[in-house]
View (cartoon, rainbow, N blue to C red):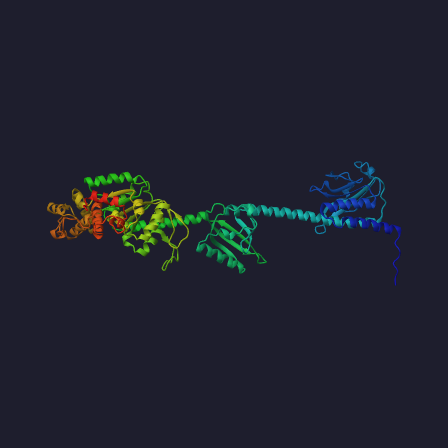
Length: 621
């Protein structure tokens, strides 16, 4: 068995130096490592000073990372390389001056000896700096101590390389962080439940989310409770959960700060572990709104084209009779306002033409006038026509439909035959007039509209209200400015002009030449009571034009059947209706006014009010 020879005194001293340095630096890193290294190196070797320094980029100047001298720290030490023993280390060689430093380097008058070891990056071979000790006494050469010195120089070089790599990494991370935060595209790092880990400034600005709420903010909380929006986000996250990508998905959201609707185009990809996603999105709200505006304008355009193709009663308002002049004067006055207008009159008196005149003279004339014939629509479809419907709202709703209210936004809506709508639709129509908003059939999102209402009817709406067939509150909402279109029998002086105008229109349509109407034919027209009003006159003139044999139009007697002078459907006055109703109720109660079974209770009146009405209407008890 080989015996280990005993250590000599120099060996023990060298081991003690090594142990002191190792123990002093074992648990240190960074700046603390360098400070511990030079302090323990100075104490263990008995020299006055020790330092670790790095070369600055121009390689002509040195900055100390830690500088220990005469048992004290020197801070912020820098010096020029030329004229110092440190300059030799730059070449990559160990530099040892056992003595005579002050004579060789006059800039160092108090230094007698110097030992410097280069700090070399093991990967690139670059000289990063040096580790050095110096003293005012001579420093004889000790090979083993020099090796020990080189060992710790390598350790110092590794730490300096690590610090530089960490600094470069931090700078790189800062650059990427700046790119991440300042990118014009929104970036979000989130988990599979959409909880934010990080989000850049663009994402927070688009979503209206304060930076203080990140991380932990749940992105899906911004998705509105709309079936289509929820379906889209469910499908997108389901795809990510299966390890796939979601590319270019359009999502509808609500901003966190003010609830405004926004639309984003969304790309998301799971990371390698499948627990988090890297998401980016762009704000396409303006694009979506523009597309919706374009769709609305296209729908309006299609509607207006259909209207142009339709055969209206007249192209112009023709006539100069006093009743017509009085009506047009009222039209001019109300047209300049936004007041709701209720046009009442017998069938065929041109109520739609008056509605068009009101719109054409109003500030809304650049926007559309949308027409709804309430009598021509089934009760089950009128709500869809007025308010639109969402896809799948009912059987047959294969596509989303924009309603007439939405089409008329900014313009006017003409509700023809308003007295024909059902009680349920009356309630919804009243809400729109009061709140200026509605919801599509099957929808959940209120839609704001700015629409002027022009309604028309040939019914006596006051009688309809009295008989509980039409809501009183809706009637007063519509009847802000009532207009009454005069029947043709009250404007007989307009008949020759109307007949001549119609004859010219139908002659051009049929390719005929009509120079005028024979005087006997005009007399027949003036003598006829026109129960069908202007529409009936138009039909008579069209038939006469078809049957005409020459350029002068004749009106055959058989074209004007004999009818009662009482116009068809002439409405009774409100007083007459009220009187008949009160008398009928009194007869049912045996002319008893008071009591639970009396007429006043059945009419929902106070007995004193009923007696006052009876006296005013000439009803004797």
